[in-house]
Amino acid sequence: MAPPQSKYAEFENLREQAVALRRHGYSLRQIRDELKVYNNDILNQLVKGEPPPEWTKRPRAKDDLRARARELRLRGWTYDQIEVELGCSKSSISLWVRDLPKPERKRSREEAAAIARRGCDAKLRLRDEERRRTKEAAKQAVGGISERELFLVGVGLYWAEGTKDKPYERRESVTFVNSDPDMIRLYLAWLDLLGIPRERLRFSVMIHENADVTGAERYWADLVGTERSAFNKTTLKKHNPKTVRKNTGDGYRGCLTIKVLQGADLYRRIEGSWYGIVESALKADQQNRT
Image (cartoon, rainbow, N blue to C red; front, side, top):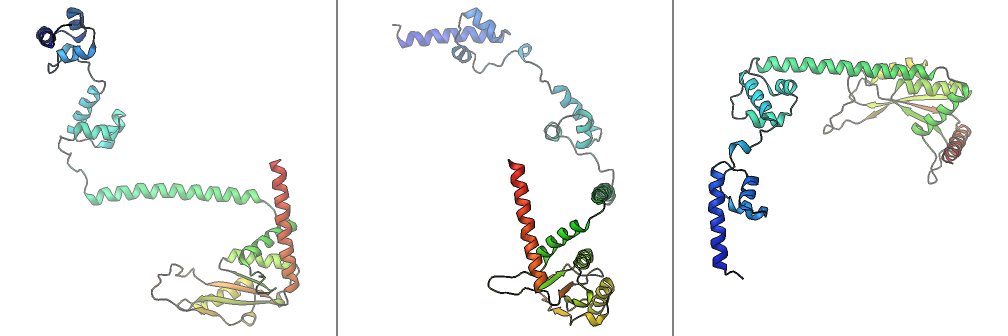
């Protein structure tokens, strides 16, 4: 076995030769073949600290893009414009041109903001038009509605928005509350289908005390087509000054309550019909699963 000193001298001798070859422009492969050193770790140690010759350096694929990006930036292009022109990411562009001066602003902040608003408004108009078309198509797809369909819709509507009997509080009464005029119209059409005369209906308004109470009462009376004598006393909600109300303005008219007098039997029919709908729907769902 060769002593350690001998191995060290041998390594230093190889290193002197490797460095000399490296400085003469040899690549690692050429040095390996010349010195017969086939261990890559040892080969790298032999030339450690010596830069590779220029001819061995591969040109980077993005060098041309980088140069082009810098050229465009110096001409005053924005990141967005360079991105569209070269098809590379903004993060890459930022790294390539961050040492260059920013192009002078060609528009004032107000002008830029106005342009941005116009673009935003255009997008909102397109979205609104898309919403309108979708809703109109869905409305037209409904077509006509049969009495049975109206009956089923009305049962579901009442069970969602009407008062219900509780085991701990028996109150088999039919009372419906809503603020949507179309919901009120549909509910009244459903009551007409069930043969409930308007004389059995009592109405009342619930509204915030600082709203237009008189205007709201007049609006709901006109909507349901009845005299104010069919209306009970309006319920006023106390205003909490700590609460910021959003239901304000000319369109706010509170809620309308519709109570059916002597409605216990009607309530039982509604509840039974609702559970019939549920049972039939679950059976249909089970059949679809099998």
